[in-house]
Length: 201
Ligand SMILES: [Zn+2]
Image (tube, rainbow, N blue to C red; front, top):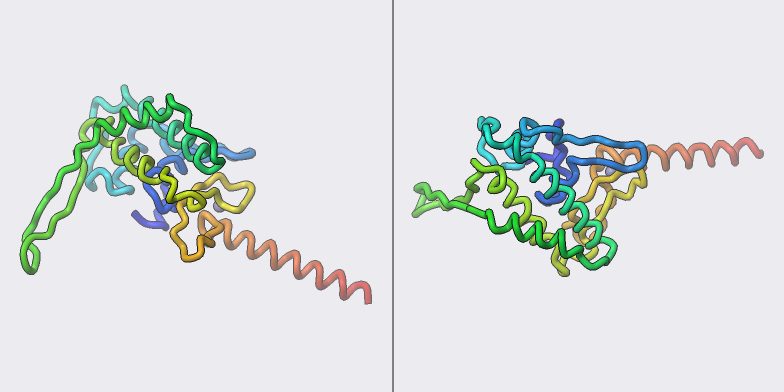
């Protein structure tokens, strides 16, 4: 998972937020980066949930609604969390349903001394592939993360992120995009202001 992935930006610093950030709506913006199962498979590979080189299982297209529904549920719960609103019980029930599909597995391989253990997910079924995202949401929406889940400071930008910075000071989805745009706008305003002063002399 990288911050520079061009098809799917991973700016959320959290799997569940990266998942909802595939559906960007705000103002005039309407971008859905997961329009079909092929795109979902590419996202799951980029996110490290499915292994590289895997393709779209035959049974998935019929159940793609489950992926879009989970994305909408997590989006709703994140907005509830950020605004301090109690969670809708129907959303909680759907999240719990996805949590029942969690099937992690562990693999060991010989290390320099002893064994190295790593974990992965059984993801042949769509419900199992979505389960790690549900788990990420469940762990994120904990009171200890209050104030750490925020939307980008650019009023036009719908991206959510989990702020792990010291002092909780992160403002932008990405410095390269909204951060730089803000810097350029501030610079332009200062420049205009200085010129206006100069003109008055
Ligand atoms: Zn932004």
